Length: 497
Ligand SMILES: Cc1cc2nc3c(=O)[nH]c(=O)nc-3n(C[C@H](O)[C@H](O)[C@H](O)COP(=O)(O)OP(=O)(O)OC[C@H]3O[C@@H](n4cnc5c(N)ncnc54)[C@H](O)[C@@H]3O)c2cc1C
Image (cartoon, rainbow, N blue to C red; front, side, top):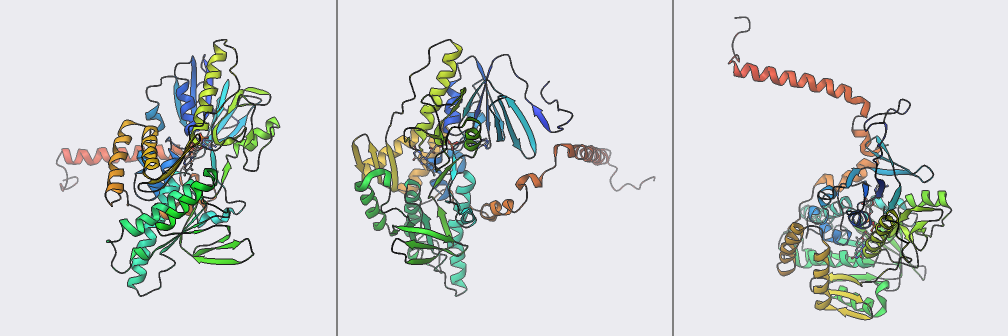
C-alpha cells in the first residue's frame, strides 16, 4: 500500500509504508525523544519521531516564559528544524493513542486524521503530565507548568491579575484577591515560580502602576510536605526557605490543598485546622503523573505501574517479553530514578545504542546505569542551590553554575544568544522582555476543553475537503476575474455598453 492510500473500510486510516531499512519509531520530542533520535543518526535505520507538539520543549525554563523573561521560541525550537540535517529521521505530528505491541503498530491522531506507523524497534519517551492527585477539576483554576500553553496561560494570568487589580483599585474595589498569588508545590518548579513572581511584584513592576502598589502583593508558596525542596535535603531546604522569605514569599508548609475555585483555595493543616486563601492567580506545581500510554503498555505486558503511573522496565529499559520496545525518561520506574532530564537523555542514548548494536550483531550492553550530574534550583537572581555529588552549593556560585548549565543545554545557537540578552535584561536590569499576554492565552484552554472533541470540532474532517476544494476553485475564478477587469481597465465601464 502506497503512502496516502486509504483502506476502504476505514476511510481516514492511513498506514505508513515500510521502508527496506530497520524501522525505529520514537514517541515524543522531549529530552528522551530528541536525544534518542539524534543518537541514531549514524545507524542504518529509518527513524520516525511521532510527537503531539511540533517543538522540542526545554521544560526547566518554562517558568521564565511564564514570568516574561524568555519567549516561548527560545525554549521550544521546532523539532524538524533541529533534525533538519539528520536525513534518516522523519518528524510527524500526532498524539499517539494506541501502541499495539503484538502487531508492532503505532496509531496516532491529529485533528481527526489517523495514521498507523509500523515499527521494528520502538522508543517510548512520552514523559509525564501534571497530577492533581485525583482532583482534576482544580486544573481549570490552577494551571500546571508542563507545556508552552501552560506557561503562556500562566503569564497571562499573572500579568492579567496585576491589570485587573489596577482596574479594580481605580473603581474603588478591594483587590486583595487579585494581588495574592499562590504557588502550590515547593519543589524546584514551585520555588522558581514563587521567587520570580515575588521579583516581578517587588522589583520589576513597581513603577508601572498608579492605583495599586505592586509591592503590596502577597506571594504564597504552599506544600503539604514539612520542608521546601525535599530532594535537596534539610539544609538546602532551610536555606531556600529563608531566602524566599527574605524576598517576601510566605511559605506555608504542612498545608494540604483541599479545594480550589476561581477565587481562591482552601488548605488543611495536620492539626485539622483549615485556612481559606483568596487568590485569583494560582499555579499548580505539585505532582506528576506518567503519560497514560504507560497504562496501555502495562496492560499488554503485565509490567506493574507505580502510584505515579510509571511503568516497571527491565534493567535494559525494555518491556518484559518485548525486547524491541524501550521506555525511557519520566515514564519509567527503575531503581528510584528521579524524573529529571538526564535520566531521559541517558536512557534514550542507551536505547539507541542497543538498537544500533543489535543490527551490527554486537553483544548486549550491561544494564542501564544512570550517571547523576547533580541537581539545581534557582530562587531569584543571584541565588540558587545546587547538589553535585557530595558537594552542596548555595548563593551566587550555585546561580552562576545554573546559568552555565542551562545555557549549555538550551537547543540552538541563536536561542543561547538571545537567552543571554534576556537574562541580562532581567537579572542585571529590572526589565522583562516578554510581557505580552492576550485574552486567548488565558481562556483558550478552558474554552477548548468545553468542546466535545477540542480543536477537532473546529476544523473540517478529511472528507469535507471536497467542499473546501470546490470553494477554492470558485475563489480562484473570482480572483482571476477581478484581475482581468483591472488589467483591461473595464472597471466602471458600462456593461454591454
Ligand atoms: C517545569 C519543569 C521544570 C523542570 N526542571 C528540571 C530541571 O531543572 N532539571 C531537570 O533535570 N529536569 C527538570 N524537569 C524534568 C524534565 O524536564 C523531565 O524529566 C524530562 O523532560 C523528561 O523527559 P522525557 O523525554 O521523559 O519527557 P518530556 O521531555 O516531557 O517529553 C515528552 C514528549 O512526549 C510527547 N508526548 C506526550 N504524550 C504523547 C502522545 N500520546 N503522543 C505523542 N507524543 C506525546 C510530548 O509532547 C513531549 O514531546 C522539569 C520539568 C518541568 C515540568
